[in-house]
Length: 237
Image (cartoon, rainbow, N blue to C red; front, side):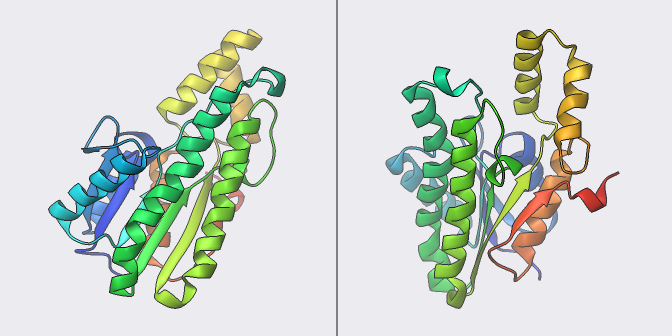
């Protein structure tokens, strides 16, 4: 399905997976708006009024929203007993509440057009548990459940909602994770990277571009309610 000429909004699109996705959508012919706190249209996805204003600015530039990629997210790690309420609230606000607010803001355009594509970025941590990231796991499990609910609610409106669940991906966020683990465990960065790679479904670190390929494929397809793991074990390089 061609997405040429359709308006796509990518949150957190200034770097990493978001930047790779925005670039690929542009190469596929979409008109792309990037919403982030550092690039493109400025907006904090946790703030309802900022989301409203940012999406309105996107519409003024590129027309009604047809594709939404909810990519903005954060990750922090700590033992559960050392996870304070502020950390919990911050992670849930960005990863889950931000996805809700942006989806709710984009849906009226899609309903009016009888066509829309929503792709949310979760994590393999949204499908299973892992130590020291209880808040992150909870937020990403929430994104998966939210996506499936949206898919069910709008299945007869020409709107699809799917979620990609990347393993560890070569982004700035991974760099911070490596530094944090190295500092706490005394392992070398290479040892830590190999350990994380073994924990990925395909046994390797993903590239932002292959996550972007999965996102854009879902935006161009007609399936809905999927939770797609990237990189897929059967596609290990």
